[in-house]
View 1 (spheres, rainbow, N blue to C red):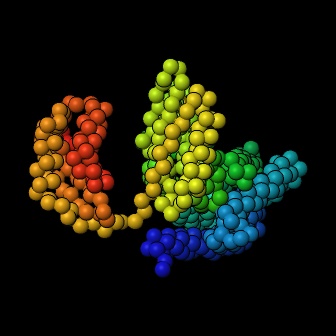
View 2 (view 1 turned 45 degrees about the vertical axis):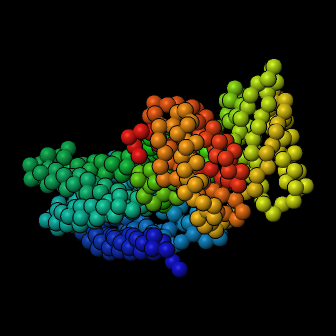
Length: 478
């Protein structure tokens, strides 16, 4: 059965792919129209500015086709040969577009220098020249805005590169119009030095394109060599710091592949916490990263903090957990400079005593090898309870048992009241549950001592009692 979240993610990916392909294809059509118009008018008027724009648009057409093909390929799902997907194709496409822009600039500069110093070419600043450039500005403005919108929406560097191309067209076309206007003024007013305005305008176009293409090329190279996106690591570090349970991060690795971000984290958590707790912390960290980067692929490795050297109990727990032993009730005490450790070890109830004793012996050895100050380890073996045991109301005289247990509670110092006392028969034994009210300001250690005394008294009165569960409540919170 497909999970709803997976279905939603697949549907969003399909919508993203269709929208990106649609805007990329419209870019191809617009580039074809403008290139054709500029070539025809440029040849007719002899304007190098318009011809340079035609060459620029011609390479934009090639770039638009490359972008369209790259977007189609980049959205292919990951496979065995490309486990991280095909997103790098978008960066390669953007790099190719940058290279094409630089090639265009070299030709424009070469031709402009020839016309300025070696070759005289008559430029006819006709209404057609102005018209085609105004049409170009209008089309490029709408086209670049549409591309930028989809590029930002889906974090597509290929579409962003395409949008950058067409936004540069807007500026460069404006410069060409200025050059044509100055040539027209030169002819009308007989100002000879303004006749070179057209090649100068072409040089200005080249300068704009060189600057923007170098900026774009630098970003695409960064993505191709897996440089971390600017500011991404700092944002993630700040988000991680706000998650309870994370002591600190040892590693944050971020890389971009197409519209997707890959995040690799190594976190340090408290030692000896339950696996479920560690998992909840990891899931919360992952959700924080997804708040920043919704489409990110997040890999998190959580490691426990090394227990302080002076905390013997925590270090004992750490050794036990590291070797997959289930322990509880760990205590340590110093006797004449010698540390003794007592603990309960839970084992499979089906194990023989011989096999269980081997596990206990192995645990003792591990603790002594890792904690040189520990002189003796005493392991109490308990069965690991996995199943729910059937229980019935106690077969003894319930009223009599309850009366005696309540009397025991009332005679125990530290207990203010008791309620909800129940006894159940489990096999040949008895399980007792009771709620006790105590002083709200009583320290937890003292509360534990009181419950230990109660449990001892209960067992003295009724040896058949197997388990006593005492729930301590502060007075006024019953």
